[in-house]
Image 1 (cartoon, one colour):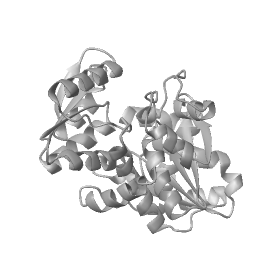
Image 2 (image 1 turned 90 degrees about the vertical axis):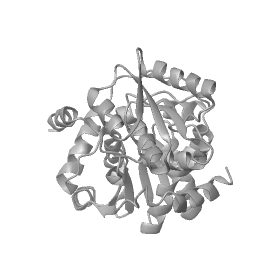
Image 3 (image 1 turned 135 degrees about the horizontal axis):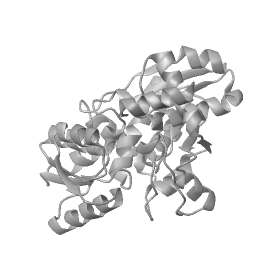
Length: 319
């Protein structure tokens, strides 16, 4: 763990200009309603629409000299990020997809320049097939979160954030499987030790929270959630688990109604459409705002890639 902050600093310099320094914008609406100073880290404005571009770019750049192909499996944000990074470094990105993937997501990954392989089965089937092909052909598998190169790439956001706001009392981030929260947390804790890191998960998909509470990675029941980009089980032995144990100060769960309402607040206050995983982090702040009155907090807006019908449904649910 001790050298991870060095990897993050090295990645932070190396991923430019493929990855932008995302803006930190104040939410006047949330600041007024919650009686605290709320800042939104707008990583949903990345070229591929999510923070995943950071980890994918860092991973691909590290293998690009020796490999001209990489493989991954993804239903959306990660696949787009790997395709974008591959194009930037002249590396062919092969993305395995389940045939259950929404056509709009398939097209977005194809438009980003990926070679797509469709698998008849579940998302897990697609991942297993991609990993098997990676091993068979000796082509690097670009992990969505379970690799230190990916975690270091995600951690570059923390370097930016502390540079933009060195006086934060707390940062709220969607927890998911821990790639973003872990990398971000390593950077924030190294550069601003007094800042608290709050990991938030949808109540319908909270494997990492249940695992942190259990002290080991465990399986946990899941149901459908607006935060589909952060849903899923944590891989056994994932490098993100001990990192999250080290850097996360508090965990919260939020309901689907809270996520929808948070997405609506971002749309009303800052005119941004964000996906459910970003709404998770905002909902965590809203849920605990009383404890942060008069304090300066940041919320990570991790992505914007949401189907219009899904977004409109969330807005209807939030009224």
